[in-house]
Amino acid sequence: MAVPLLDLNTQNQSHSDALKLAFERVVGSSQFILGHEVASFEKLVAQRLGSEHAIGVSSGTDALLLALMALEIGPGDEILCPSYTFFATAGCIARLGAIPIFIDVHADSFNLDVADAASKLTSKTKAILPVHLYGQSADMGAITELAQERGLKVVEDCAQSMGARWKDDEVGTIGDFGTYSFFPTKNLGGFGDGGMLVTNDVDLADKARVLRVHGSKPKYYHKLIGGNFRLDALQAALLSVKLGSLNEFLEQRRANAVYYLKSFKSQRHQDLPLILPTEMEHCWHTWNQFTIRVMDGKRDALQAHLKKYEIASEIYYPLSLHQQECFRDLPAMPCHVSERLAKECLSLPIYPELSRKMQDEVVEVVTDFL
Ligand SMILES: Cc1ncc(COP(=O)(O)O)c(C=O)c1O
Image 1: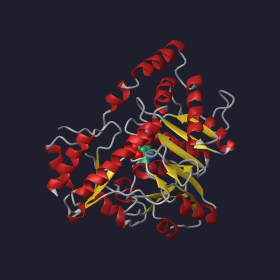
Image 2: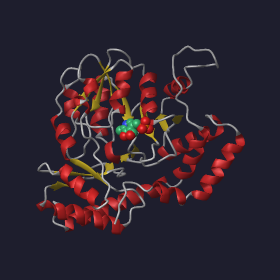
Image 3: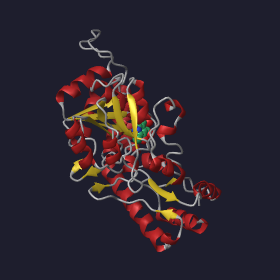
Image 4: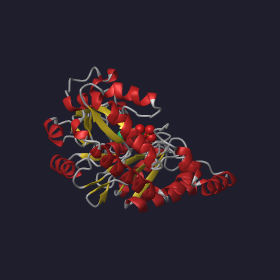
């Protein structure tokens, strides 16, 4: 049985009537950029996350860039970020002339190792940029403590973890800014690119809104240099429809994770070169990815084997950021766990609409091979 990595069509079909109405409403309004639809979506997101302000932007990458710009991060500033994440996290730091300082991660949570972060602080460190990878919060208790002790700003990269919680708080609402992506694979997947920035600080929110439109306020008068980071009205209207089902999507992802864990355990996975992912203490995991670790150098062969059975899988990520060619001129920052994970990690399908039969097939093919 073929098992895709994602089934957007099934998800979107189940919202088809409401999506069509939203589409017609926006087309009829002729207001295609920002405006009422974006403002109303921002309000819904702020309510859902329990944040004071939400600012709709063009992508998760632009949300990160805008957050760092609003915090006046610039040339020579050092920003701590995990080495094991999607490129945008560090790319945005470097685009502002700041220096990404790569921090190793924990092998069990895949998230930032705060002790390693503390050991890499210097007088130039301005901010810490934790990523809540694969849908699970980083250790926001230790990160907040370190940031408060050293006067660091905190930008949470929640691209993969909308709806995840650290203790009672939604990720993204703990630091100075939280940034989200609506790339179609994310917990709230859009119909193209889109992103959101949240903050509880009214001055930072105002600044981000001005920077979103080239730093213009009033129109055509620029005290700041911003960019075009605007969200489209169509995207906001369609996402507003799907936001109503976010909790359901997350519960389905969680149920799928529970089922995978139970099934792998019943196959005596502990006798295999396989480490299952874990929901860490204080975390309410949203399982944007179900990422196993395949030991004994068998990861790539397992992926090829899955492909033969038409089971999709993905390697997030095959190379740690500190090893990327574009960062070769930075001082060496060894991150041994990240390097190991880049050779071991394999993400299996876990999208909300995945059937139990498909999951059984995945578990059987993986365990048979290993
Ligand atoms: C951790 C992380 N940060 C940032 C981004 C960037 O988001 P976008 O693709 O919407 O620009 C992504 C998207 O893949 C991501 O996974």
